[in-house]
Amino acid sequence: TKSWRNQTCSWIQFGFSKVDAQFYVSLFLYSISRESLRVCGTVTGEHGVGLGKKKLLIEEFGDSGINAMKSIKKALDPLNILNPGKVI
Image (cartoon, rainbow, N blue to C red; front, side):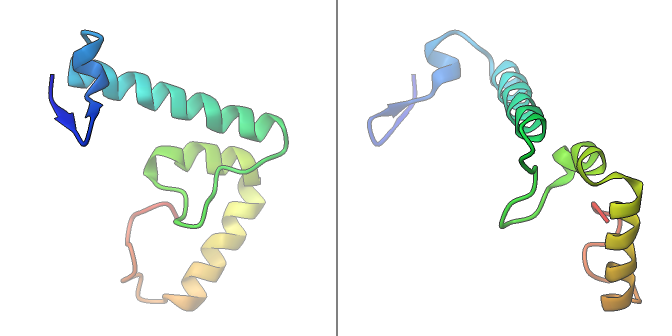
């Protein structure tokens, strides 16, 4: 196993491949985000949403919320040069 500062790479330690580990981590993070929405939390954070949570953002804010965000984005970035094609 590889180790970094006394921490071992868990997917090697438990026999998971890196691809399997990434899948399980993604599934876990999705589950946490869903639970957050269930208890009236949010999927956003101080660094934004990220492409992986795009569908959850739509679920959280609905079409009207997303349309409002798109309007603000268009007003602040009319040439669409800041993160084009990303979440909003």
